[in-house]
Image (cartoon, rainbow, N blue to C red; front, side, top):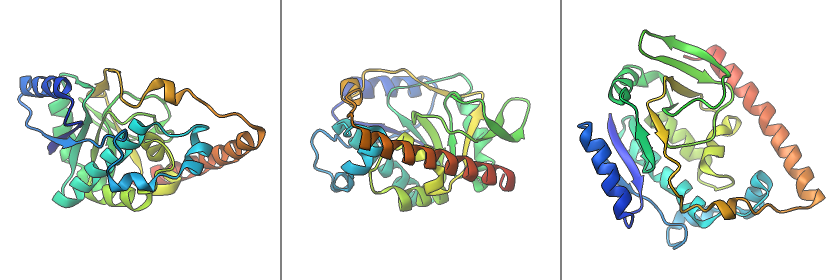
Amino acid sequence: MKVFVISLASSVARRASVSKKLGDKGIAFDFIDAVDGRVGDHPYLKNYDPQRFMINRRRHAAPGELGCYVSHLLAWEKSVELNEPIVVLEDDFELTDQFKDGIAYLAQLTDKLAFVRLEPLEKQFFITSRSDPEFTLVKQLNVGMCATGYVITPHGAKALLEHGRRIEAPVDLYLKYTVIHKQLIHALVPHVVYPTHTDSIIGIDARNQREKGALLGLQRFVYKTGYAIGNLVTNLVGALTRF
């Protein structure tokens, strides 16, 4: 599978670090030029829905957060364009020594998959699809929050693009909302990618600025509860009826 790394063209130091990490392991890759939401010149940024985002996160989206979302859309479009599964990494990744073996393992199964998270499980709530001596593939009943590294297939990418071009939440929350896109989210165990939590252009301060108000709180409670129930039902049905 081809490997693509989402990175701002201006992030010279990060790109040098990425090249070294992957080069040291003999892994070929290409960059996907990330969208800088602070500049705001990509047409997809116009799809931001501030009202729905406010309900989902109780705050406005940070400019870098919008750019991150659009950058992942571009990665999904790349999978559709190539008509093949790809590995997508954000540029603050680290790889384990099992990365190449993990990708080779998944390459045998991509005809059955839509999206596979490569980073550590945040929730120990899953059903096993396949267990082998070196790796286990699991179906997540409660999808974790992070998009540092994953494998996406063309049919998975098409479904995510169809339902996700309107920006109503951060990209990892959209992925978690399986009730919307209907895709079963798998995870590889043990993980082969993990985030370094390098300073992000998204901005922690912006993400911590929560709006108050009883009406907004009620709306958020209703939406959050509905999504939680819908996600669980969607994931259970998918886990019990699909690979």
